[in-house]
Amino acid sequence: MKQALLYKKIGDKKVQCNLCAFNCILKEGDVGVCKVRKNIKGELYSLNYDKIAAFNADPIEKKPLYHILPSSTSLSIATMGCNFKCQFCQNYTLSQVQDENSIMGENISPEDIVKAALKTGSKSIAYTYSEPTIFFELMYETAKLAKENNIKNVMVTNGYMSKEALEMISTYLDAANIDLKAFSENFYKKYCNSTLEPVLNTIKRMKDNGIWVELTTLVIEGLNTDEEEMKKIISFILNLDKNIPWHVSRFFPVYKLNNFPITDTKTIFKFLETGKHMGLNYLYGGNVNTDDWNNTYCPICKSILIKRNGYHTKIMNLSEGKCANCGELIPGVWK
Image (cartoon, rainbow, N blue to C red; front, top):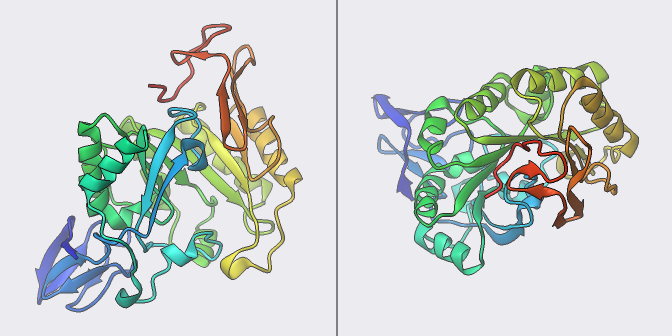
């Protein structure tokens, strides 16, 4: 356990957690929506701070992040817990905590995490697998040490963090892949037990704070496959920056939606083509076997800049962040 950051006392031993958009008000003994933050005698504690439940050296492309340090290794960590209840979560055994006794993990300090990153030659540390917002104290302390050692920090997140949390971590955060699961309040409420608006706010704030942003939408047949809704996602991205990469991923049955069909690849390609037609520069297909929608192309001369086959990545015509063929500046974090 560790005393939590970002909360305030509101009398009668109650506290308000200001870590995410739920802003849970907790009486003594209560835990938050995430099940990993608890009011103990009028103080808020993180129950998962010293319990690392996943610890792997991954390709950065696995996050997926395609415009930051391509072909590099990212030391990836997670604790248990999440503030969402997504019925289609592929990591539900990590994310969905039943009670505090079910919070498992190994005691690995921020110092040891950074040492492991250096030992594995990782150029970044990824806070991923579950929702990194809910292990904020561990992420924050690790990210500061990482920066001191010239290691970048990336998040894979549902985007439900508070403005205050983002302000604290933004100094140390280099990039994030944010799940934009749908463009429907009803979808977020019914299938994630959350709301859309805070996610959109986080995307805007990260962009404003100079954090490199990529977005992922997992496409589930019949739930978020309405063409007009997808156009709303594309329009939202275009209004921010046509250079934000959009990963459109294929769903496979899992967890509480294990009776749903695998998403047809034609649906994925249709949305990618729509995004291209509407003006997005960087579009990628997830969980589909095609090079065409995995490669990075120059938006001007159409040269292949980065070629990807699964997690095998080869830099082709990208030099110092520019297209080697026509000189176009390619947005991203390349060094």
